Length: 233
Length: 404
Image (cartoon, rainbow over all chains, first blue to last red; front, side):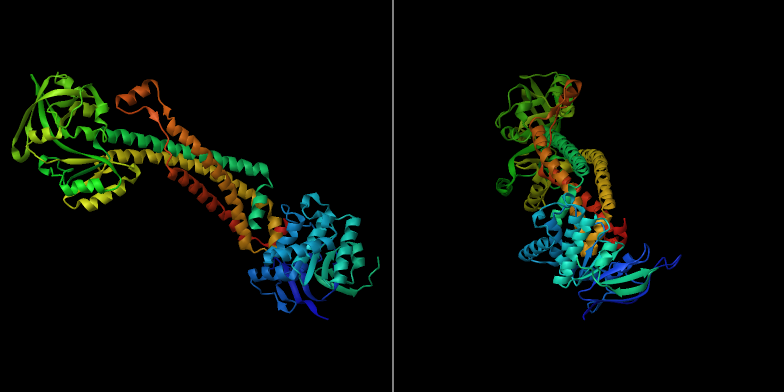
């Protein structure tokens, strides 16, 4: 299988000079293409920090992170921004859509940064809106969408750049159970049909149930890494 | 997309953006009108003062201005006349021969300045006919004289009386003549009223034994704003035997007064711009502070900081430019209205102005440069202040920003 993420001996220490906090401690993690992986653990266990490191949003104090064969550990900032744009999709807990852009424009924004043509953008946006079941909300502003709908648009935005994988930080934390279930259905469908790799941090047992691999973090260390049997819905 | 994003961001907080734009708008209107009124007042004053006697531009023999004697008179040669006729930008010109004499009537004697003029041409230079308070206006062949009202009063003479002039002509010769008073002139300036006596140019040349000679040629330009350019052209073409002087060189004290008054205006404008700057800066401060999470997200998903900074610059410029452009558009008709319908003084203030020959009005200038300058200054303020969001964008750390 093709390895998409290879985190080798990764550590992240905050305040190394004063009171060191080991947010991520000597983590080894390999993620293969098409995985549907949940990072679980109590609050403060280092889930979000690990996701930030894997997404190139933060830099490790030690170790190496290789994404799809490219070592991003020492990349310069602008290179890293470009790398994120073209290789990694992000879904945030608070949706973080651009409030002044419509659903279509939010999705299109990423492709504009990539320099895609109008035709390419229009086709991709229509496809993605259809996949997330929001074809009728093309020109709707985020403030007029429900939380679940906003998070679905966020997933579509993450997919717009055709990334190697999607990192989702507590994607269902702010959603009701119906919306959370709908979102998970979409993510699972994309994972299955398009072989899209998902890594998400979560506390949510419903999400953990749907994951095919569960990595447990405690105090910044991986304490278990289990392939699970997916419950059929 | 960045432009669209910036424009829409501007309207996220409508009240704040509108208040900022309104403050820019008010300051621009005030700044433009302050500058337009001041420029208009000075233009009017220059027109009045220059129109008294000096004219906008004069050609002399080299060294005449420093040593104003008949020995520095010159002959307006054919080539000089051709130069005046062919140089673009000259509305009209008139030759003068000027010297100092003693004027007496009966027992009374006073020193005065005799100016030989081309009466018809002087109408286009200093509007001499309009200053005629009594009697008739001189003609080129007239052998009479026109005197300032105050001079006539001190010599106890009136229209129809005779005045005797005694002075020095060319090459030490005696200048003496008897002239009938044709008219009395009223100048705004008391100094001119007390000291001026006008003869026709041929008459003055005869008096001073200076046939064919003049001491100055006064020029009225078609466009007073291009005066320096016209002076430069004439200076180059007239050659080194002549000096070409603008009113600024002939009346440096007036230039200093304008400069001193301008300094006061710059202080007022400076305060206005300071107010605008604080208004815009507070908006930018809030804009940057409350959108940290969004900026973090944008950088996280792949927006380069350079582009984020550009977007924020566009936002700050849009606030500034919108208020500024509307302010300029509104102030243009107001300035034009005030140019056509100047603010008029009344009562004692008006009397003081009119006593000195000035119109008691406050006209506004409609020079394009005033509007452009104010617009440009506000644009520069916007650009300078946008350094703050640019700085914030470049020092942004996506992870930290998203935690806020």
